Length: 237
Image (cartoon, one colour):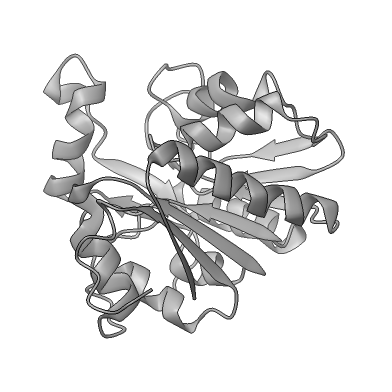
């Protein structure tokens, strides 16, 4: 696991861009993408760059259940706004939040991932060390699944919604096995509220109580953190 500590989130975005640029130039065909505040700086740099993704494929980590892609709080809408409408891919796949049959949707997305093996997967990390929507206690061997969001995650998401009752309680997420199948992973984390999760991910025991700790077993992971997110690290990096 390669750890890069930067002074600001902007510097972190620049480091993440270098990883994407290198993967692109080395022929990566499938890019796993993430939402949330952490990747926005990276997406801004991708949009400004001359990198062409029109012959590449993207697959997203997750999507809220019961939100249409046209809903401003959906992850499909987020991706369109921050990346896709300015830097289109040949194909861009996300889970369908309006799918009526959860088992069928899980199977559909697993087939997409099997047909499009991820070359580079982008991740953020939650304050409870979740990656995607794989909350503490999620089995390491799980693939795409419908997730009941924890109270902590729902609380963190309230700021994006006008009414508390509008905050989704479920989501579809790539599973931890799906994430670990990526050939390369880059994780970005900024802010002091991520510091304990970063420490547990890097130096703690590998346990399902800390979903991101499974990344210790991946052969090609780059973790990019600002000084605040690195503040709890117990070992020199």
